[in-house]
Length: 130
Image (cartoon, rainbow, N blue to C red; front, top):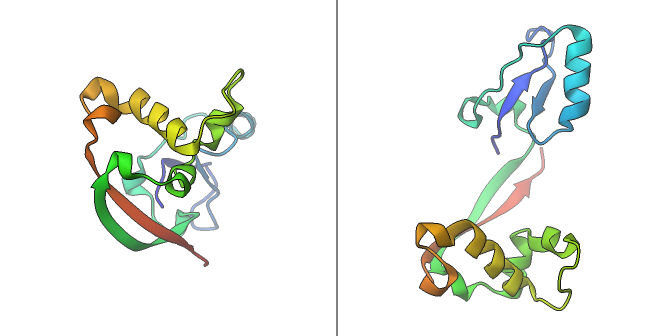
């Protein structure tokens, strides 16, 4: 998997310390500034070299289905668990209903709301151990 990244300024020949945007940025920024590296620019994910990637995935399946055909297990796998931690969240909502709420918040303004029931690509994958 590629992600936005940058090198923290260590000589790339002797071993670069690579950070991604998903790392603890406050700690990393303080460390970089302490070392005098204040101009380390973020690079887009498309330029991340394979050796710097932290996760390798293997695609195991691809299919097309309507968004409303999502199962409870698939909705849970989409990562909606964080929505259960929202203060005053309704704990009785199913994973599919939480996914619908998330889908609406992202796609409704663009005309692809839940009620439109658009076709979506379902990409299944597994993490490859390195």
